[in-house]
Length: 147
Ligand SMILES: [Zn+2]
Image (cartoon, rainbow, N blue to C red; front, side, top):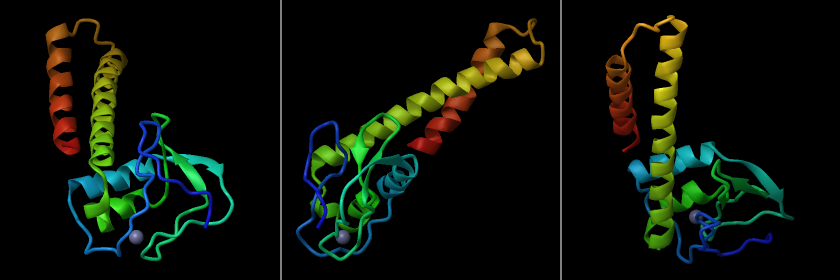
């Protein structure tokens, strides 16, 4: 077993070790979001060997870093899907919070994107209300997609 650990502090996400076998997968928005969060990570420090979940699923041999600097591991989506009943509330809340942060980033980007589009169109004449209403529409759609 690698140098794995259980850590529920804010610097980490889903650093847990389930104690019971896998359940039927929970397929919901939270599981989807765990997949997305996992896909947004990059590799951090490697540790020796591999960690195995109690059900046999094997993790990668390095920490994974989320864009906000929080450290997680390659089994995080597996835990959310197959060991949901053992995922502590602290970790569920962190995942939810992370999704809100991502939504905020999308909102900021959408506004910047609209401003750049207007610039590209040399739209110095375009009034601010038009820019705001386009931004609002993009925000609405981005929020629907990330709820
Ligand atoms: Zn497992």
